[in-house]
Amino acid sequence: MKTCKRKTGKTALTLTCLLAGILIISSCEKGLEYKSYGDLSSVVNTPEGAVAAVNAAYTGLAGGSDWQGGWDAGTYSWRVQAMQTTDEGVCAWGGDWPRMNNLTFTPDFDWVTHNYTRYMPYISRITIAFDGIQQIPMSDDLKNRDIGELKALRAHYAQLLYFNYGPITIVTDPAIAANPEAPYTPRPAAAEVAAQIEKDYQDAAAALPAKFTGEDYGRFSKAAALTGLMKLYMHEKDWAKAVTTGEEIKTLGYSLLANYEDNFSMASKGGNSTEMILAVVCSPTGGDQYTNMWLAHALPSDYVDPSGIPLTAWGGYKMRWSSYDKFAPADKRLKMLLESYPVGKDAGGTVIYRNARTGGDMGAVPMKYSPDPSRANSQNSGVDFPVYRYADVLLMLAESINEANNGPTTEAYDNINEVRERAGLPDLPGGLSKTAFLEKIQDERLFELWGEGWRKDDLVRWGKFIQRAIDDGSATAESYKVLLPLPRSVVTQSNGVIQQNQGYN
Image (cartoon, rainbow, N blue to C red):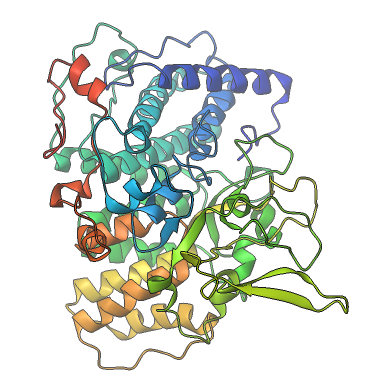
């Protein structure tokens, strides 16, 4: 997403760049819980400074200075790591990519430890910004909105770390966050972390509008904060609260788009989508951090788009054939997931297709996104990256109702069937048991949400994350690897006060 959404002038743009730079520099340092990120009160003491501080905090959605990190398409991105460690994906590039599939993780494997040091500084930086914004003479409405967005972002970043690494220290005292002499503290209990994330999301939801459009599209809204909160409740298996939260989201005016593929095309730009709850706003000309490179990673090198749009194609990401074969042939979502793909046209103008399966490829082509019709850049696209969609909420609510009621209700059926009907599939048969209904949810979340970053959390919640790797032949998929290792430097520099996750050494 672009780092400045509100019309605040050159001063805010300059301050945004300054604060974002400090975030980036800080994240390259130790990244421990107590680390100081400086006193910026002299910067964040005007309304323009507040806007800049909030905008800088948003850079984490695109990974900060990471190349295609955050919710983008590169090695460190949450969506790619979720795809490559689950039944969604494999990669044709070799190297360290099989380690992701096999769960061959160690505290020295940067691919899986990197995001810990990347995102811990964001949490402390946001905490420091709260204090500065509280002192600024500005309208209460703007102040509450700024703080609401920051609380939602702190909750989001903390939640991603908690889901992937286990309990972390969320520094809520700005004096401690800014104090380089603050002592190391042991990791807290999981319940304490979950409670703080819950509070931040709840505070954010109370302060923010239901949705954002126009120049503010891409910011955390009430609906986005509640969606993050619902994911937390499901992770904690607090099904009653998950149901209540899902029901509230359904009152906020969202609905499914008529065509699934429109979620992943220019049709959803600028808040035009009734389905997109939160997205990373991309540009074909905004640099490598705020652009969509998914097609470059996923398209085979011989792919030729029938429209004539030139596209960079590196041929890495694939969807496993075992997962692809679960889709019903009539599923309209297969339009964005290709067994056969275009490689050109014959002399008469008829499109020529290559079959990836018979050609020996590792899996289907996970196209997911439509090409950017602007043709501004063959590699960089302006199609936005979804973080939260309403279809995800409907499926989460169906699952939560099933768990809370020890079996599906009419509403649970209605929610999943709404998603299936758009895909051209028949309604589920009635009378399913709790277990049978959950199995349908597990498959439907694969069909609907593949490549969007949530499959790892899903499989962990269902107790299937490790078994998937074992089933695919991994000899290193031990049970403790539901959590990623902390970087070895974190444990070493704290003299063991911060303890490594069990099983890693």
